[in-house]
Amino acid sequence: MDGYAGRRPSLVDSRYAWLRLGVALVLGTVGSVGMWSYVVALPAVQMHFAVTRAEASVPYTMAMVGFAVGNLILGRLADRFGILAPILLSIVSLGLGYVGAGFAPTMWLLCAAHILIGFGSAASFGPLIADLSHWFEKRRGIAIAIAASGNYVAGAIWPPVLQHFIASDGWRATHIGVGIVCVAAMLPLSLVFRRRLDVHGAGSLQARSFVPPDIGVSQNTLFVLLCIAGIACCVAMAMPQVHIVAYCGDLGYGVARGAEMLSLMLAFGIVSRIGSGFIADRFGGVVTLLIGSVMQGLALFLYFLFDGLTSLYIISILFGLFQGGIVPSYAVIIREYFPPQEAGARVGTLIMATVFGMALGGWMSGWIFDLTGSYRAAFLNGLAWNLLNLSIAFWLLRAGRPGARTAVA
Image (cartoon, one colour):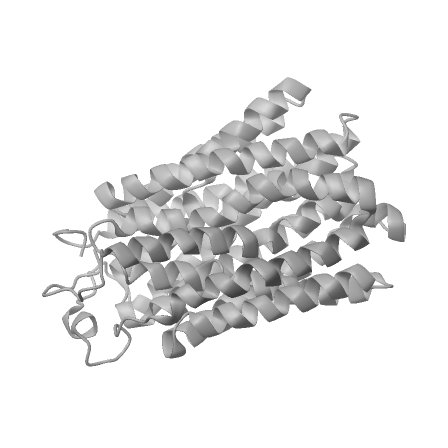
């Protein structure tokens, strides 16, 4: 898929590679808590500080900013030193961020703590996905999908757990407890990632053999377009994922029902992500992105039409099934269209763009709600951004795809 041929390193596609992938899934499940914890805590924080919905959404936005910057910085760090160093920085940042959030006396300090939380969660997503992509050839698409699924496994497991402890012990004690759990669980898991493949140097076999596909634009232009697509798809994605808990509270169903919907959404997103890996291995990353974009738009339209309790449960399940493969498809596209030694930096930067989209979408939906008193206009806003993503994916499909895929390499 990424255009190189020749004898593979002995560890690629090995038992150790699969072990590394399994541990990465567990590490991602723990470390990705920073993506979802504030979604559950938002109503309690809004009530505690007596602020507007848009103001209460700012810590989430700051977490996404930290996550975005972390994917860029830690991705470059992984290219240079391997994945272990970013993981260790992640552990420190998560511990300090969550404990700091638990003791934050003001919204501003809570926002600052969530920058650390987001930065810490970053290592368990983009940099980890890029690292795993080097350890597989025959099943690279499915490996990337599994590695990316840690983010959604976290979303399926953490929200109901966090909602329980927030209801019983308060959001401050819950944040402190999460920080302690992250450090205790992630530190021993990090030892598995001490090995590193030599794929980054200019003289490596992969670097020498890679030939970029000719699609009529420069690689820098292509990368900018992919970043725009990433922002657009995640502005659309953020509306249900960030605001479903608050939305259910506003409709009178209660925040606990919203937390259940978020958990279901992300649980079925795992199915979507794994399925997208098989599609990517068979048809490539661009087709996977295009399918996900079409289906995500359909689910957003259903949210606009229906707001009954049963309907919201069903649509949340469909939304998870439809959109889970979108973000991992970008990592597959990077490996198809760009040199392997740039994987960490490019995947990290593209993930940064998608997270900026989530941050923008989370804030924008709250702002539209404050302006209109309803989320209906916010769903329409998401549909418009999704159309932009769909247009770029369709253009790339028409422009051309990588040539022959022998053993996915």
